[in-house]
Amino acid sequence: MNIAVVGLSHRTAPVEVREKLSISDEYIHESFNELKSKDSIIEVSILSTCNRLEIYALVKDLEPGIQQIKEFLLNHSKLQTEELYPHLFVNNQSDAVTHVMRVSGGLDSLVLGEGQILSQVKKMVRLGQENQALGPILNRLLTQAVSTGKRVRSETNLGTGAVSISSAAVELAQLKLGQSKGIDSLMTLESERVAVIGAGRMSRLLIQHLQSKGCSSLTLLNRTLPRAINLSKDFPELSIKCGLLEELDNCLETSSLVFTSTSTEEPIINSDLLNSIQRKNFLRLIDIGVPRNIDSDVQKISNVDSHDVDDLQEVVSRNQEARQKLALEAEKLIAQEGKMFLEWWDSLEAVPTINLLRSNLETIRKEELQKALSRMGPDFSARERKVVEALTKGIINKILHTPVTKLRSPQPSSTRRQALNIVEELFDLTPLDSD
Image (tube, rainbow, N blue to C red; front, side, top):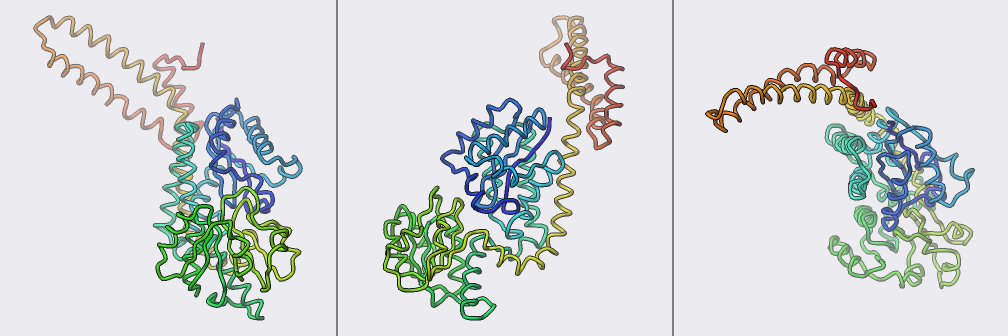
């Protein structure tokens, strides 16, 4: 068996490719069922975020398993092989283990150390469990990845002051506002007429950072009004006008800065919409949705400046050097956690032999106990029988403790295999997979 991860991220693919691979909650169950039906896949889980889609799997045979995952991604994306495959990465065994630990710790994020990815990895574990796609191997790996992400944030300084995609989007708006005035610095947003489209978690973070950067009022549009109103109540110091997406035309006419973060599968803003409205002022659009909420064709319209998540790199690079130093201590922690998992994985080689040995001794214990009890006669009480049985079980457990501990302890595979062969020969054990 092999652990593998196949996918793409902001490091390997542009947003126009990533958005084709995004798997919405509506289709996640169907995707799990399709992956579980593959004959080479034993266990599987899916990580789908705005910056990555990764399929983690335990596969019987490495190459066929990887190929089946690639075919799933190809069918899901509706892309041609030459359009998708160059952007995919593949990791297996120790590289796959290290990768998921780094992802959970925020070391592979666009914004180094960002915290939202940890909740997304937790969601990956939950979805895998709910869809009955996780077994003991992946469940342990992904659960340990979550605990590693928590350790990175609690035991290192990487999470201190870490920014999110949302805060980077607000900072990009500040930077572009400054550049429009010939200043290479971040400007306050107090004079901007701001709108936020969508009322999910990303929008909550957007509003939080907008408020901290000088924004005192904004328009919040969503598919459902109650959700927008509930979100606005969490920001009592901000003047927030809530509305429905049907009011988008008017919102675009009156706003100067618009952030979009919705779960729509198709763009909600395009050139036709912008050309159809009465817009007099310059409009800056910042889209952090994947799939994108804003069509790329708006770039050709005058007095419109449009950006997507890939444009956040301009902001991220300004702070990346300082955060790279903080990441070094997190990398050491991740190396420790990866080593712990791989040692556990290697120790599984001993499990069949240990189970056979335990079964062998248990059979002997029961036979000898039955002989002894039959000689004790009817005067031997039920309580005394229980005491004697507990005694024999305790003896077996004491005998097994040291060899089992040694067989499962970290050691070279060749050394472990040699020890297992000796145990199997000494106790005349028959392997479980033999005929």
